Image 1 (tube, rainbow, N blue to C red):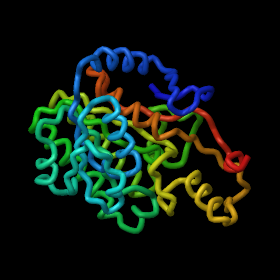
Image 2: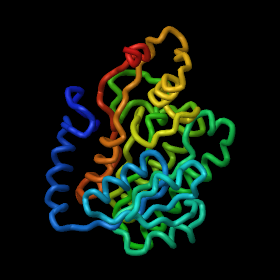
Image 3: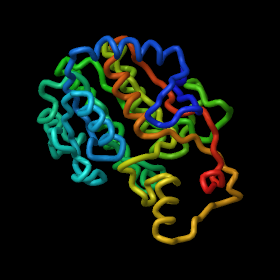
Image 4: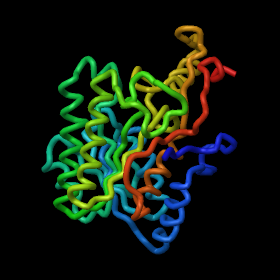
Length: 282
């Protein structure tokens, strides 16, 4: 079942349109009363991870950030969050950060098709083996839920619209392959060890703390070029379409899935709307 946002609302005014979301929201509201959650966020100094940490702090929860700061930024770490400098490829680093945690948000990753094509071994060392080490540490500490950040890159070239969870999965980059493999590990740990892991497949996420280099998406790149007085570059005819989702909505979805005890499995996370590149210029 797809999780998506109503296109009639602004980021931060979320209306979820799937039956699953009503289950998640109801359970999370119940659990959130008087409950303080201690959460490990791998990659918590990065774009999405820092937004999750900020939202957790606003809700009165206790985030612990594990990040090697190779693509994350120390300036993204908010006061009130504990920071452990480390790498998910090292189980000792994960162990140093996880004590007392109730849930893990796994966002540490090697991101992007081009990076994975240039460095396919490193891509799988981080995205596959790193995720497997996070899952194993969670299992050893009896943490029942890892909310894992996956990607629409697992689908490869699209065969049909809309893109449902059972869309053919035929990734065309090492990144897509590694993200798909990490999903499979999460689901296998559910079956083998009774965990309630959730995999959220992000489409095009935009918002605060996003980088605007080659590994950012078109929105921050356009904004940077506009602010710098540079021309905007559109490749092809400009009629390519993407589905964009605000990072605050992604952070909210992560937290709600963490708080809802009975939610597990794989879900697409998007707004179910197609935007042409040229429309961003209007």
